[in-house]
Image (cartoon, rainbow, N blue to C red; front, side, top):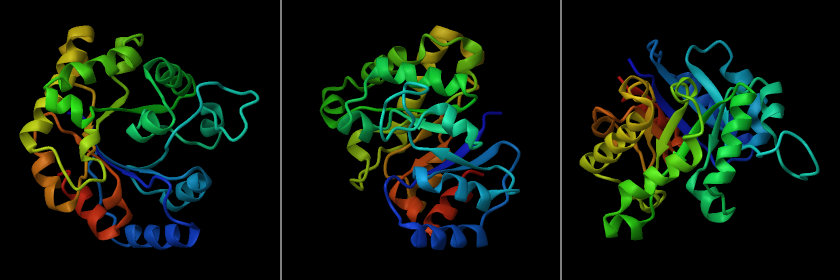
Length: 253
């Protein structure tokens, strides 16, 4: 049975006092998780160790970084490396989020390096992929996303691929209030799984959790998560509201 994951991406939000308040609210009502379920909080760099301490002992609850550098060390002022994250006990890292692809110009070759650095450090990558509206309207979304996966992941072994997480985020649905229909989400997730199967075999492809990340909220989480190839969500804005996010976590079951 694949792991089901509700991942919160706080992005560049919340000063410490606000983060404390949100965490307090989450912990008061944090649902107990089944063995195949996880909740991941991808928090800003300054809050990583604090968030870990708050979640300590809570089964299935994990902390992730939102990015890392593609080099392990060096003269890269302001950057954070995978070994640094690992030294803090971080075991998950979001890579290739559409905002970084757009604003920092991250492409597949760079992301392949970041994948390698995370994996070498014992960190599980949460690899993000997804198409802009123009590609969706042209009907080329499946091949666009397949090219992202091939470019960043296909140098990895089957054993390694089986241990990563993929998050599909239709760029046209992020922060816009628009959401892919359940049919659109399932169709893309099935396509991603087929791309993996063609390269690594069905047994490996069937092990990889694929999350949906495009304006996930309490009102649509149950419907999305019932799709056979949707294994949870990468949640942005709704994760900043404790009641909303707890409802999304509860939708995993």
